[in-house]
Image 1 (tube, rainbow, N blue to C red):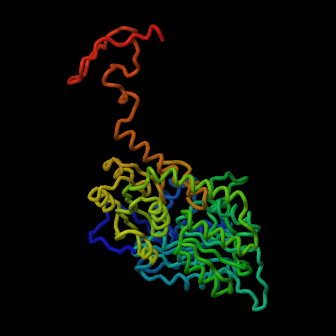
Image 2 (cartoon, rainbow, N blue to C red; image 1 turned 30 degrees about the vertical axis):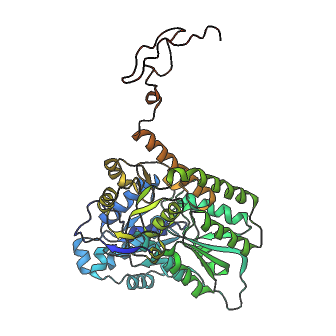
Image 3 (tube, rainbow, N blue to C red; image 1 turned 180 degrees about the vertical axis):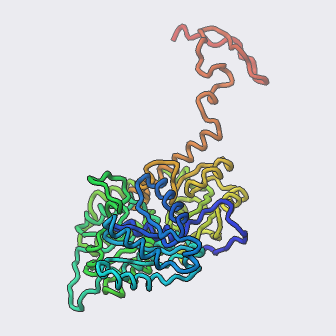
Length: 483
């Protein structure tokens, strides 16, 4: 069990944390035809927009109510009204998701009341999907914004089934945490479909931010789960929640629809995936397909190969709680020691993290701890690259943002394949680091008896060109003429 410790600094020097509103906005981007709307100043939206564009390298739909100083003081009803009307008339979305920000939360805007007034004033919006989530950025973090948004979508959009309505045994709801990339969701979809199941992902970033080219331009999200499908999620026989953060949404789904849920706190590692696959076999009534039994064997072999290089390493990791727990626990099982762990918000999952403490802090704290404790492997997002350079240790990027590499959205850590690829990548980084720091190149393998290490120029009967200090003079080299 890890002790949760809060840093006592008065400011964040090199921030690790991202705010609730952009976590909520990203969750809305997993819905088809969605337009996320941040109720706050233009700057709040601009920074979030830049962050997502740099990470996904895609066009990001994100709008703002553009609150000025005067509007903030007097109240934001007119801004919310105008923003909803403009988006509805110009971009033709299927849903508008509204997230609050610090400035409007401090003022105390009643956005739910604003939405009610807008519906009454404009009949065309009476039944249009408008979902508001309170996500002040002066508290909590990115993961919390995602968690609240998914739970609110379930509460507002999912239809409560009739008491005697049958469940579809093949249909499964999947509630993925914000620590899963589009590549992870694609892998999960393939796994579930191979068991004969019909998954509905909420949110579904693999449909909207997986980097595909649409046939036509649209100012809203270009894919994801449709509102019509979300409405019918109560027909599913099971809900699978991935990450502790999704427990709230899973409970909301169960309370509203009666659909039972199963929570998987992590899907990186051998044991968690064994549990996941056995659960799918149980609810589908099918054996685990042969390809996944083979993938399991490949993972076991990969763990055997990689543990020589990962075992004993001292890990420094900074990430959102569920991502930190997922990856760090898998590496702990490989013999890596979780020596320095820094996170962004409190979570009950830390009770199961195999380390002494988790610090609520920033990347400066992570760098300081890594240096003091002699860490030799660093995992965090792209803003940790300078710290890794100063510490001169291997650096692996996880989480959001990853703006200095392409293909970030396609990274995969779930399932047997995802875990295998992660172990290979980290082990290869450690091998490269060992070669670099120990200067293990062909030039360093020269024999002290031979100037060039290859014996070039030596002829039968020739004497050694030089004798190392302290070594006996062996005289002429033996002739090879008779061999």
